Image (cartoon, rainbow, N blue to C red; front, side):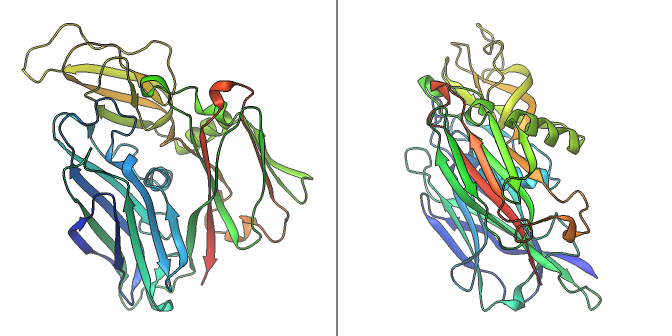
Length: 377
């Protein structure tokens, strides 16, 4: 038994602003796909943009079987956030935008619990067809032509390889734009075992792409209840969930940034809450310039306001919470016993209530709910 690493495609053209559709093999035991997208940007096109990283323009990743049935259906940011929660390093890419530099995005699509999971994987022979679809919302304003993508498959091989015990269906289930001091009342579906529930929370961004507020104000209270609201699983704030996710990982959430941004504009960090930052000059001419770099003090939001009037880019290391503005409520503490996960049918109805703070700055944010459920073999 062994893992074979084999490309589905390498340097495959991906239309700028389009959808790439590729068939997966007709048979085989597929554990994961590593996605590596890359494309040079138009010179200085991102200097005043909220979306300045390549991952920000990956609007949808889908894996479908038999034409329309979803296995995965997520945004690029959600894919990256889940990859980090599955064990990927939190900063796999150098995020920079000087000149026409090549921008990159790496993340995993795991059909099991993690990379190299020998218990759960996608048995491709079970389906008439399986297709991956990748969509980006780039344009000629920001990218000079078509993108490229590498898709590296991890296939479990060998006569002694075990049979799959199932795979994980992971999909954007609900999304909405927030309204001040408003509850969203949601009833979760009743099918399958729920391994994780992911919340992707994005504040609105106003003047000069700076966040209107922190994500923990966009969602200031979460209630997850089962058996007709008689049993509470979670009744706390999003901020407490961010900290729980941090405590259970035992490692830092980091992002590595080299922004070339206009002074006064917000730099999207890839973290929901920035707790610390280290910065340094990167002068293109080889000589430090005046004024030196500065960031807005006391700002713990998902964007950091750049205070400078120089013409160089800067190296930044950010550390904090909520990778890609994502948080997870997890039920797989006993990862090898799916019977201990949340049985949506047995404890129905399962209710998710999500509240937005009574503040005008919490308006017009975006909340997405992603369900990660086990489809048994």
